[in-house]
Length: 191
Image (cartoon, rainbow, N blue to C red):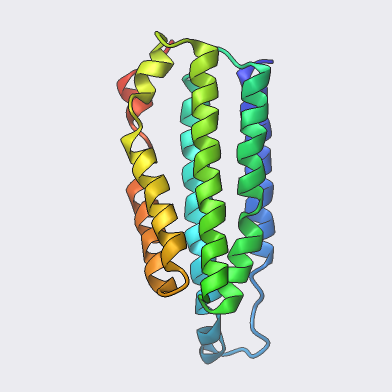
């Protein structure tokens, strides 16, 4: 399969996920600014999830553009990532509607963690497909930020029972760390 098809399919799935997520935002029935106040957790969880999905979309694009080889294993690893990302609207809605309660915050963290693990699996699969001496593999490097992100998600999930707001701040911190597109592929361009 040509990598363009993989990228186009992934783009479409992420676009659908974003569309589903925005459809969960319900306007208030009262036409006043005061009616918006109770909706802040819903909107805040939407913004956080939108940023996370945007980060995945951007980095996925850069990563796939940097590869030369796409195999069947890469296709399945990509589907695994898309599965976890597709759960984002559910946990986003639950988090927003719960007013940042412990169990929804932990569930949100689990989806973030599993998405990060799935992205790592996709990266490993792409390294196998492109070879250990490829430009792609050199661009990936040690992926320290990815490993720190996984540890942060685990910490956020563990803290959710006692300090769900702190967990959300940890999730926000990870998003802020990844907000700038991953420069690894620009430093090591592939042809």
